[in-house]
Image 1 (tube, rainbow, N blue to C red):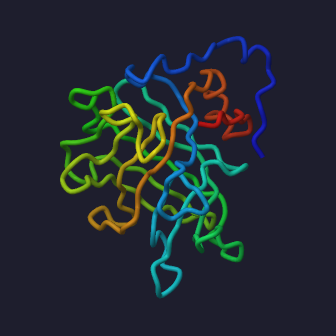
Image 2: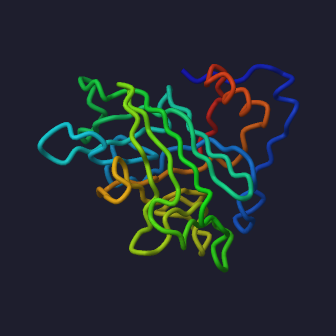
Length: 231
């Protein structure tokens, strides 16, 4: 379960500043990720979808990952030149109402992904955009509850961008969410094969995680957990 950090020294060390306005570029820092309210496979809601991550049945197997689950903690760090997404999320085979409670593939997944190629400010806008690089330029992995490590690669959509972080060029937000969203497409298992639907679809908590807290999470493997600020 998530617990709030109670150390007064950590709480006083850093004052997390919210986004100043919808017009400012996303600041550097570490942020908690939440589910996006408009995922096509909801319920349950999710921040990542990787269909056919494992071939469970003869049909099309939907896998989703609940970033808001009590046992989940997924962080995004932007340092000015790269985006790193890392943490653990509860998920697995999605039967249309919940993650299959009888499946050994339902549980906590470890997620790690880095965008450091093709990342720049979107032309004429304040969003961050990954574009202009070949498919598979940015990589990561996801580890199942059974310990299997599956590769992840970015995939441009229709020869356009592979990932976007922001509120779009009209500052109205993505798919009905008026805050900061992250969305983009992924290949899994094979860098050259895309399975629809396999993509990020999350929202960004509006205030950064205090720096000492994020270091503690990384160093202790999540033993200290910051209470999620709901987007």
